[in-house]
Each structure stands twice: as structure tokens, then as C-alpha cells.
Length: 67
Image (cartoon, rainbow, N blue to C red; front, side):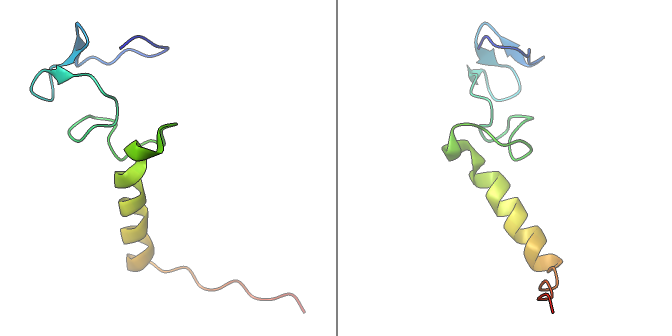
């Protein structure tokens, strides 16, 4: 996968970290999975799940209304 960054696990468009499957940044097992927001929203499911768990574990207080 060509682009502005280079993954150390990518060799000949295959991911050496994920069973030599075709490189797909954000796929399960990828070092980027769940850590970054991708333009392809299908790859952001893990990030949304992580954010939902964090919100349940540490709920933010409701903002006060201005007087």
C-alpha cells in the first residue's frame, strides 16, 4: 500500500503482522486498528466501541445551563 507513511509490517502489499494478508490499514490485528480515525468509516467501528466503553466507565457531568 503506497502513501505518505510506511508501515514496518508491510512487505509487497502484505502485512507480516497479520498472517501475510493484504495490507489494509485499520483491519483487526493492525497496529493502527482502533487508534486512529480513517476516511473509510467502516474501519472506525473499533474506535467507536472504545470511546463508548470509556464514556460508560467515566461519564462526563452534564454541562450547566447559562444563567
